[in-house]
Image (cartoon, rainbow, N blue to C red; front, top):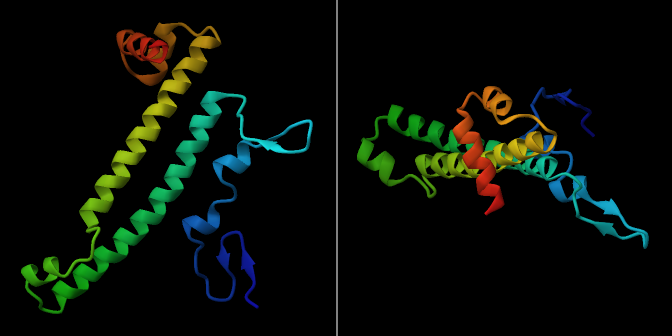
Length: 153
């Protein structure tokens, strides 16, 4: 049996994957016991919920990007072995590297935007002024006002 530390395998020195590093899922972190002993997935704080979703998406993205990196390395090896670009690109498995990168960026943008909106909402509910929130995010107060209006509609 191989010994492992939190940093990886002690015998072979390999690093853990993103999946191995993920300790719990969002649903597990937000489960709250009810009076009947069952678990409820009702989170107490929507900003915390959004942040958990963001960390889960980052984990998924790391896994997908590691796969894309392996694909890119295979493309490099194929090209360095003397194969033509037409042949190298034509043999690339789907999703191709750029499709994976685009999908990851899109997913992170969506979840990151939701996290930002929830942060702004939480700060506003704590009485932080629109000008102070704008300064924290490095945007105009008009942008913060627009994001706060978005949540109301």
